[in-house]
Image 1: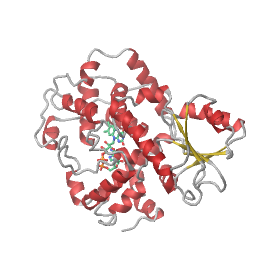
Image 2: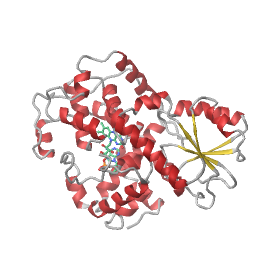
Image 3: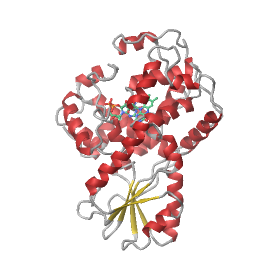
Image 4: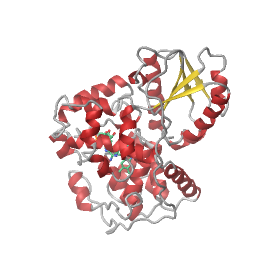
Length: 397
Ligand SMILES: Cc1cc2nc3c(=O)[nH]c(=O)nc-3n(C[C@H](O)[C@H](O)[C@H](O)COP(=O)(O)OP(=O)(O)OC[C@H]3O[C@@H](n4cnc5c(N)ncnc54)[C@H](O)[C@@H]3O)c2cc1C
């Protein structure tokens, strides 16, 4: 699998270049088929790189538009916007992530009897068992398999959705707080109220090229009900749009591993780089062997490319302040801090840092700044804005 997902920006760009000519009709007609591990697929398999911005959404669409009109590549472009939509949606409702953590913790403290068999792929359900094992062994599942798996988990096995989201998050190379949590909630009928996703044997048989036809799947998918009320959207924080003039230290995080493409970076790179060691919570959430190794290697690839002195720092409240003290630069540049596992401890560190007289310069990409405000409701509202958003980003055929 290391070969399937080589951990470098160069490899991601190469994958994008190979995929782009196929991002039109071939993608639209083949994207729903899960051909199984090791077989040529119609999908791009770029998500582990896009999730960390080893390549950006903008770069992916730009490359595809070298080969196709926006109309011909419409499906692929929409999928890329789904990623940004989920991020923006969660960013405006951070309480949904906190709610997931609470549900997860409660369920892990007292897991149902069938849980272990489900994550080990010993349920007797054809397909489901294979996907459980494929996920653990490879860190990867096709989108349709993720949908079938989540649906069977929730509606056939009647396991808590948060335990399923935890299992995915632990092992996926592209594990993402927004895409994962909200996709699970969408399948369960908790995102679009009353709308669920039901896995059907004939659909699975058709889109696995006849590999699986599971029996005894739930015939209905009654939406889950929870006491938690989805909060009204809060506007995302304002942040800087380019690196500052003058000396600064860069805090490199997994949410953005291509700072070289930030406006102003090329002419004013950082003096030094700080990398935070994962907090215990982060480490426990994405603890699958393959996924955690991929994260480490992806960070290392960015460190090597940026080629500046690097310090690794513990995520204690005063760890960052101590690391910054004595540095000639009294400015720390960080990528926009998304809702997710590192946010609480990092926010505590940033408060201490500012109290110690260090300026924190949070940088938001214009892509997020333009797209997120349209994630107030369902995706279809945002979808209508895609042509305008692409023009705003200067993306043309
Ligand atoms: C239950 C469930 C959990 C999921 N968890 C994650 C997760 O943790 N991280 C993650 O990145 N994706 C997640 N997805 C979304 C989707 O399955 C993956 O992004 C997709 O399979 C990636 O494969 P690809 O790169 O070949 O996608 P392609 O089909 O080639 O699409 C191109 C890009 O568009 C984006 N994209 C495609 N489909 C989706 C989608 N449904 N939602 C959001 N973005 C999408 C991805 O960035 C992807 O790389 C989840 C979906 C489900 C149903």
